[in-house]
Amino acid sequence: MGDWRHPDIRPTMAWINATADDLNVSAARLVEHSLAKHYPALPPDFLAWEHLPGSASSTGLIPIPRLHVSWCSRCLAEDFASDRPAHVRRQWVLAAVGFCHRHRWPLEDRCNGCGSRTWRFAMPARGPLRMICEACWQPMERTSAPALYAGKDTRVRWDHIIAFEQQCMGAIRGRTPDQFRFNFTSAGQLLNEVRDVCSLLTKKPPNDEYWWCRTRNIALNDFACDAMTPGYIGLQFYSSDTRNPLATASPLLRRCLLAAACGIIETNPDVGAALFGPEAPPAIERFIARTDRGGLDRLLMADGHWSSAFILQIKAARERMARRFMISKLEAAHRAIRNAFAHSSSNEQTKFNRSTGQI
View 1 (cartoon, rainbow, N blue to C red):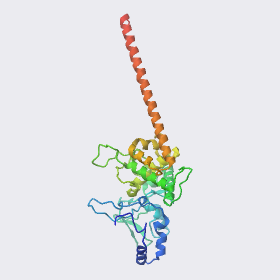
View 2: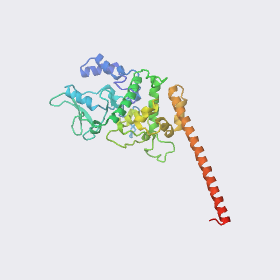
View 3: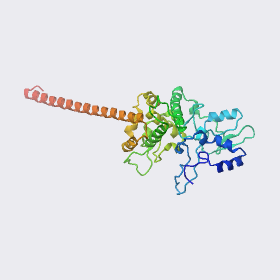
């Protein structure tokens, strides 16, 4: 009906029993494998969707909500090598995950041969069930070459995001985040921070000149980290009005959003330096400078919505930025006064020289 319900997230017993009969498996086994069983606190907007439930298409019709599946090519290769049928892992439909945590490898949602996004399960003449591209009929376990040849520095950046994703996954399960990294932060507050930061990063700036179309002038593009988009150097994204763009993001966009959120929310500045370069300004300061001040202030004032630690981080960053701005203004005023005195002194000396004939 266009709401946030989906059989695998909030399954009804009627659906479970009917599907169990269709698939010739027990209802208890279906319940055991459902997302609802493993992620009881899963917010629906932290799932990957092809279309946001309840959002109308260009025709005015509301499409059926479907989960957007990405995959790990290494998991699929292992399945085939071990004579196991290919299958979708639960992690692959979570919007807060852009990597396979088992192989520490980027997830994909398109064929590495032809770039098609359409795929299906197929039973070959020999061997187990496989995921096959519907356009070129090649198996999906082929690995992306840019990811395969990624260097050590790139993999270190992946590990930072994977560690952040693991905290988000724990929060989705209702687990309290690591308090050494996220002081006084509850599971719900961490998810709120990720959701809101991602939304602010992709929003079009107020009074943007390109009001009639999507613009690339968004804060997210200031957080370029090519390690998150192997094979797509210098990739930029368009603005979005979605409250949580993670829900409908491609794996490329998802990893960039999570990398930016990680650098902004993490209390350790070394993480941001590792992701975006040692010469880049602190991620939280770039976030404050580039996002809508009014929208940020409204979120800061929402009682209990964000953790006190994250709010203090933002306030401290604002104070540092204001102090540096004031110092730069004073230095500019000092230079202007010094130049004015130097210019006046030079004019006086010229007049004196002319009066005494010393030109």
